[in-house]
Amino acid sequence: MVGLVERLVPDELWELFRRVVPPTEVKRPQGGGRRQSGDREVLAAVIFVATSGCTWRQLPPVFGPAWPTVYRRFAHWSRGRVWAKLHRVLLDELGARGELDWSRCAIDSVSLRAAKGPLTGPNPTDRGKSGSKIHLITDRNGLPLSLGISAANTHDSLGLQPLVRGIPPIRSRRGPRRRRPAKLHADKGYDYPHLRRWLRERGIRHRIARKGAESSQRLGRHRWVVERTVSWLAGCRRLHCRYERKAEHFLAFVGIAAALISYRKLTN
Image 1 (tube, rainbow, N blue to C red):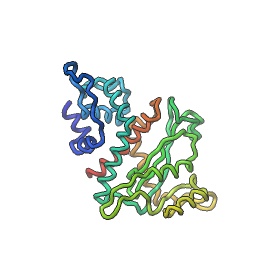
Image 2: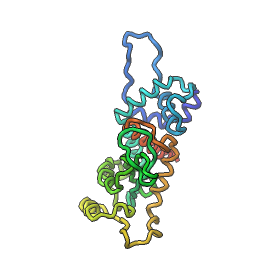
Image 3: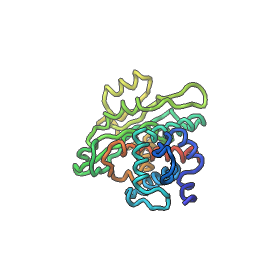
C-alpha cells in the first residue's frame, strides 16, 4: 500500500499539496477512538478514482481509509477550492522556472455526457442528450491556465471573458506576476466583434477565425495544442462522463486533471 501511495502521490507533489490543504479536524480532542486517516493516503485514493474512473464504492481497500472517508474528505477539500489552489501553486512553480509560454495562448471547449446534476443541458453534438462542457485556456505548450464548466448547450463564446478573467496572477522568471496572454487563438465559435473589442481593450492580440471568410485547413497551426490538452484531460477517466450530481465535484475532477498535467510538466 505504501508503494502505491508514493507512486500516486510522489514526495514533491505531496509537499506542494501540503501548502494548500486545510488541517484535518480532530473530532475527539480528548483522544481515543479510531486512528485518523492520513491526508496523503486519502489524496492517493482520490487521484486513483480520478484517473481510473471507478466509483467511490469500488475504491480498493489497499489505501487504508474506507470509501466514505475518502469521499467526505474529497467533498471538504472541494468546498475549500483545494484543487484550484493546488493548480495555481503548480503554475507558480512552472512560471518561476520559465516553463510557461504566454506568446500564443489558445481557447477551446469539449462536451461530454452528463448523467445528472446542475450545469447540464442538451448536448448539440450528442443528439440532444444531457451533457456538460469544459472550457479551457492553455499556454503555447498546452498547459492549462484557466478552466471552467457549463451546460453543454452553452455557446463557446460565453466562456471567453470568464476564462480570461479567471487566469490567476502567475509568477514569472523575471518581473512581476503575469495573467494576460500576448495573443489568443480561437476558432470560429468565438468570432464576435464584442469579443475582439474586449480583448483589444485589455491589450491582448487575437487570432480568431472568421466565419465564411477563412478556410478551416490552416486554423489549427497554433490551436492544436489546446486540442492535445483536451486529450490529456481525457486521461482522467472520471471526465469521460459526468457522474457527479454536484457541479463543484465535477469542477474538482477537472481541477485534479489540470493539476496532474501541470505536475507532469514540472517533473519532466
